[in-house]
Image (tube, rainbow, N blue to C red; front, top):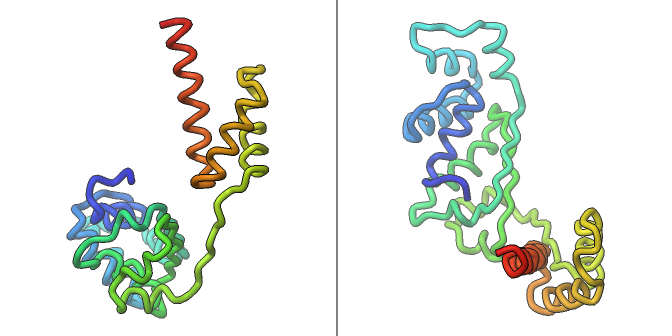
Length: 190
């Protein structure tokens, strides 16, 4: 969600490998070659042109296993889906040394992807159920216990009950309590 353009993912991965920033198109070309080829050191060295990096450091960077965690994967879904194809294709290559872990709020996201992408993802899904009333209440109590008696326990029960009935999203319950504090602050100090 922090990226203004989904293709900036290429730039971020490139930067983590090479240590400098380039345009997404250049980063994508480099990553495609780097993650598919066995001779990663040669590909890595070509990214520097005439200015060769320290070979010991370069070798270390090329041998590393990389784990990319992508939250809000559904935000990267574009019409052509080239980015998603590349992200899930690269780990399929024998020498890629790349693992992609993705999180999406959309349950049917793999079904909305092109079949060539969903075939690379596989069927490994870990579905998190919405939080129930007890869990929301426990989390709210834990988070808000650091603040001296700002909420009556009945207020937190009410928030937990409403959120658990509609979404079970703990972020929503925390937003509600934050907004309640803001309203009280504005009323008394505003």
